[in-house]
Length: 457
Length: 66
Image (cartoon, rainbow over all chains, first blue to last red; front, side, top):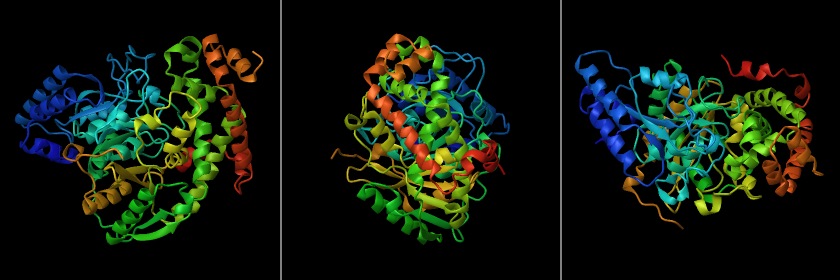
């Protein structure tokens, strides 16, 4: 029963007494401890079970329940909890114990959630594949040889494998949306600044944002309500009538896989059937926005890691070290000009594409989910091409600061998911969840990989 | 130490091991320099380029808020 519930369903079942927090947490721990996905870096079974029993006692005493009461979760290993190790996917911080707790974790705690462990991630959140030179590779539950996506690799994998019903990730250039897409779940990159970055590992302060992953848009909305303290669920069931959705035309998507374009066409048809007005949307500057993102994050990341580059260069994985060195070599004027141009570019999008439509629809990724043997670059010359190609359709919206939601829109011939990206105006997270919720209910494309078998081509 | 990127790394105190690593990939780093400059040249040719020099950085953050 638990496997079939999304986060909202599980929370409702616990609140109703149909499932105890202890049962839900024990099931999550069992799955977390018995798989070969490499999704977890640490698990806290005793503390989680103790919290679950306390949650059940709390309910039995008739006390008010939070919106996540007794729901087991796990998060990317970069959200600080005072006194507990936060490794950030690295060797350099493998023993790091922060002295403060992330505001977002505190909000989840206050809502009654139970954290069962910390999740695999790319080293310092740099890498879109699930590759990690220190931790090994996180596997895709649909196909072990396929990449999970990253940098929130464990978040995508653990949610897709129904180990936990929800997880926090972070997104600087696609790090929530890519694993959500490759693993077949829902992921939201909120508007830049919508969620506080307090006490979470920084990578690029101009682009970073935390973001939730779950198996439904309504569950993502529930998590966002808790994280922001603002209502995100009240309009979820409104029809899409009156909304205009701009589907980015093929010529502006670059070299997109045929299967992905077909899935996008079918998604547009489904959204039209739901009552939305569909228009063909030009977005010719998408590659430009993606390129600008690279000029912003790289020097910011290099500046953050300057001391590590000076004193512990050998402790970086080759892929991450070389990407940081790129940022270190960038001219200050280049960085400043790219940041200044950002306001003009956002104004251009607001006055153009986002004036023509309420939501922009496009794929999350141009290519079908690659196998690890083709994507796990070790830092050599092919690295930039692979990484840049994976995030070509996501980085630009990070540069623009706009919210973007990923939800499955189809499956490729191997049975691996293909992600739809819905982009909105600033602070349009609730609208994106509403569109995603309607789309998911109509298409039923969120599936359980444990009940399906994908095949390598 | 004859390559500009090595000078750059040393000036910022990057350890020799790291500098040697960078030297192995010096062609790639040089391509980055050239690509970065080309991107900005491209940006300067765009219609909204005037904003490149007269838009305060805070304008972006204000646009994201209610």
